Amino acid sequence: MTVTADALSSLHDVLDASAVVSDPDLMARYLHDEAEWAPYGTPLAVVRARSTAEVQALVHWAIEHDTPVVPRGAGTGLSGGANSLEGCVVVSLDRMNAVREIDPLERLAVVEPGVINDDLRKAVAEHGLWYPPDPASSPWSTIGGNVATNAGGMCCVKYGVTRDYIRALQVVTGTGEVVRLGRRTAKGVTGLDLMGLYVGSEGTLGIVTEVTVRLLPLPDPGHTVIGYFDDLAGAGQAVRDVAAQGLTPAALELVDRVSLQAVDDYAHLGIGGEANVVLIGRFDDAGEAGAAGAAAMQKAFSGAGATFTAEAADPEEADAMMAARRLAYPALERLGDVLTEDVCVPKAAVPQMLEQIAAIAARYDTTIANIAHAGDGNLHPLMITERGDEAAKARAQAAFTAIIDAALAAGGTVTGEHGVGLLKRAGMERELGPQVVAMQRAVKAALDPHGILNPGKAI
Image (cartoon, rainbow, N blue to C red; front, top):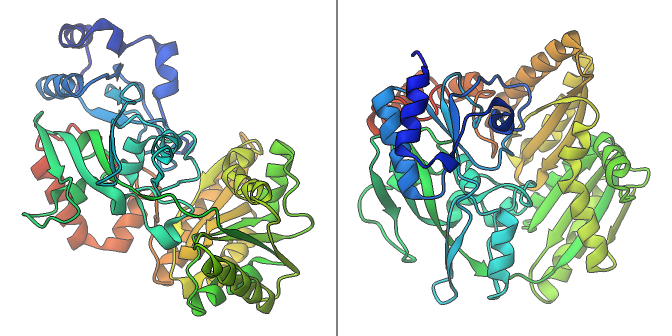
């Protein structure tokens, strides 16, 4: 494909000039997501769409000019799924940020894809409602981006992932049609679940321009428990024991010493003391059930060898604990280049997997910080290297592959919530096998017959 000045001129013919950005300095912020190690190219232009009609016009233009289109939300992804391709058009949906409807009776909201996750939560909280999916990036990530990656977060252990809260989507397809998928009703089994295909498809099947989400009643503030452990294995055993007791916390998060120190240096929260690993658990069941769950979790922590365990004294202390977990990634970014894993293993395998990660760090002489949605086995080891140290980067990439192999051997998956993007394509093929990969590519060919939607990513 050859990109010409005529192509850019023709793009201005179909879109308002204020929507098209072609200045290299202004385009720079749209080139890649937070997966710093994933490659990216220079786009022909960035389109900051304001409506479904503009997205549709762009797709028709892209078909005519055989030009890839890369959809983008806030760019908080960690797999390279929103990275620009050479000569493509990046379509940023950040301007489409309206909450169009909140229906307390049906417990749903209709939003544009650029709505920030936490902004939606605040809007529905005024009606006593709650949108559960809460990736650690919720103060910055968009609903459209969450849909694209089927994002998870801290509440997944009890409440599930983004797919569990999507009722309907409006999508611009790879042929430039605008379609509605799903339904507003609580039940519906008409036809194939085409909507489900789009949740987690990373912009490879269509561009989402409207999302109808399911809401729940606002939960009780709950009880937050903290446990200190000497090592990852002990913390992993505590996670296994919590599950073995039949407990279902609203969150069960892990943060290790490297991450705790980085957060304290960054935000001065003073969380973690001298602990090598901290587990943070929360129960949001109302009344005695929440208190009983918190007490049982403390017992499980102690039984697994916690050096300290206690319940947060008040909501402010509990919020500070969860804030420390949310700030771990931006705090660690200050230490060097960060390559982020996203493996998920069965809960029974969490202790073994954490031990293997520690062994891999030693084997490849790589600093690995560990944060995790430990309650559902979703582990995020982060390989940190000094900027510019190519030898260290090569070792970290080898460690990255070794962790994927260990997760697959444990019956796990290569990505629990970040998506495949560019970084996990090889791992996906090992996990799914050639027949299933071929099925996915057949779906891609059927729904994006011109091959213009985020080519080379995910599928």
